[in-house]
Amino acid sequence: MIVDLAVYRDGRRLPGELDLEDAFEHCRDGGFVWVGLHEPTHEEINRVGAEFGIHELAAEDAVHAKQRPKLEEYDGVHLLVLKPARYDDATESIEFGEILLFIGASFLVAVRHGQAAPLVDLRRSLESRPDQLRLGPGAVVHAIVDRVIDDYATVMAGLENDVDEVEEHVFDDARDMPVKRIYFLKRQVIQFHRATTPLREPLRRMASAEVSAVPEHVQEYFRDTYDHVIRIDERVENLRELLNGLLDAAMSRIGVQQNEDMRRISAWVAIGVVPTLITSAYGMNLRRLPFDNQLHGFAMVSGALLAIAVVMYLVFHRRGWL
Image 1 (cartoon, rainbow, N blue to C red):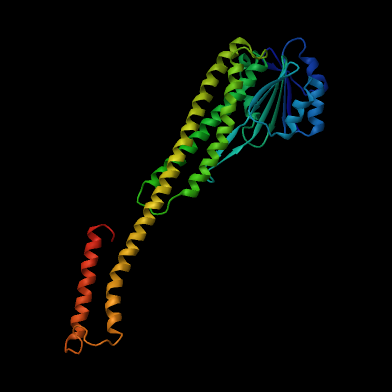
Image 2 (cartoon, one colour; image 1 turned 30 degrees about the vertical axis):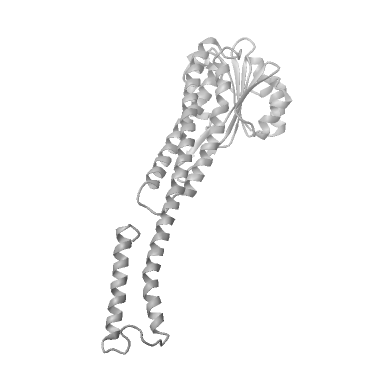
């Protein structure tokens, strides 16, 4: 559905409601059109595409919303795909959306999928800054990209906090290792990496005069945004390596714990085997056994068995098995 449609001239929004068919005509003498759509149908995107000359292949991408971050050009119209994200700390998961921006010299069509990174408040914020809107669609594109990158920083903070908790858990004295949690966080980091890494090249191009709709003054802001996404991507890569190390450490600790358990079990078995062997011999009614048929024979044999068990326990305890 079309969420909002407006014409901006000299940094100001023209008053009144406009029809889609009339919007493009209002900006021919200066200004630009900004159309916002949320999860449009084929009919809606084809209607918008016919009005602004959007290629049918690009329009098809806007409906299915299964694109990776990229920047492509179709007959003079650039398509920028973003993957906005927000972090749910309760479930330790990242919710991704998708924003497709069709950028022309005098128009911007923003198609949003999912609930991440709504653009209504961003439009209102920009409308209070005519100096920014006066720069055209390129300034709006930068504002949207900047909002997405800021949300990435929030996601990174949530991920890093959870990874720090896992790291403390792995190296404390707890016996239960958070292997499942580590693996789940690894999946979230990998998915986040797929959203940040492909975005580097599109932002580099938009910061280097390869997109005609981005004026030179706005290119400076894109260079700053490009630097931010590089730093975030490096932090994501560091998290991946840290989680790999934590998973190896957790598995190693599980192996050590299992070895300790086996040594402890083996020690107790050994302590029990010797008395069992001796008492089993006496239970076979064999003749001429030590202390057999003596007045205090049972007490002497029991004392000997206890002494053997105590000595073996002390030996195993000194070696750290018990």
